[in-house]
Image (cartoon, rainbow, N blue to C red; front, top):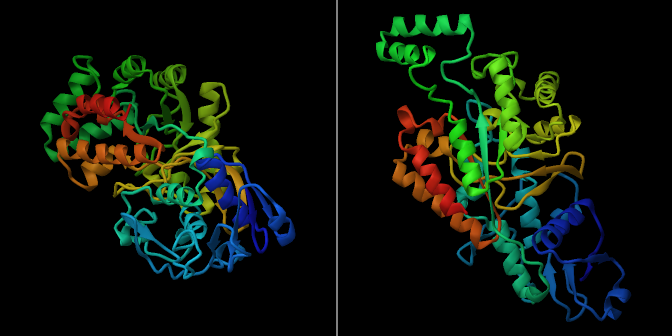
Length: 430
């Protein structure tokens, strides 16, 4: 496909690479030469303020032809069963809004560069998102828009159809609840329980420490069994930070933990789970990556932030500096939904530098803790929410990434029934 544009910019190139290359699998070329475009006899379209003649035409706003970052007037309106933003007023336009600018706005997380209220952990909140405000956070609107755009371009017959896929992921914040904590942490826990008068917790801890029952966080054999049974190819994100208020991991110097990491590495891909305290701290982050790499004896190239604690663009810039190639943090802790509006992986675009980067962002839409701890859903309602997300991802042939924890699959306390439900999730998602 040949596309006529007023000028070629990094923003425009990045957006078209995603729309035509990543999602639709259609080869394209850009031109600013009107005569060459007019004489071209193959498939073509124009994108800009006005059409050249009678070719397929998409009217633009200015966003992809500028470099500044500023508050945008989205002017949302009803479109299909979702919404559109950046409306344009030209009867010749294929879409009633600048679909390319809309895609760019969402997948670059443009709104996260602007001033906004953050939560107690410094995170961008779903309530600050335009998708939440429009009531379409639960829809992969970017993918929906792109497929409708292709339909109106009449290029369905040349699209390289992609397939829906399911990717289970595990965050290992703490491998064990009671075991391998060391003398001082274990003693401190006993003292705390005595002061609280929590005798049942003391008895539970004793039963685990003296090997009368398994540690409630140690669900790894069950995970390995599921992976073999359902031929899963999961990714594990391992916390290797120092002990702190919001970092309760086992010490990386603990032999049992090192052995577990190596065993997980035999079954699955392993990435770093940067600690809460490493947030925007490049030295601490590098230390944690090096720790995990030394245990695995191989390069670590995948990451997901602990607490999903991330700030654009600094967090991603730090990962790039450490040669991390793939990040899986793009989602919300407190809400189910598509933070970037898509169920498709995309490259991080650094708006400050106005350049596409090598870091691939893999968005997820649902996490176990969101359903149980934030939304307070029953097991049945939580499962139904997951089903809804899977169905939405299937419609656009995207990737359903599910985030769960080893603690959840231990099935104790607030997680009773979740190991069995996880098997149902796998079966439905596959």
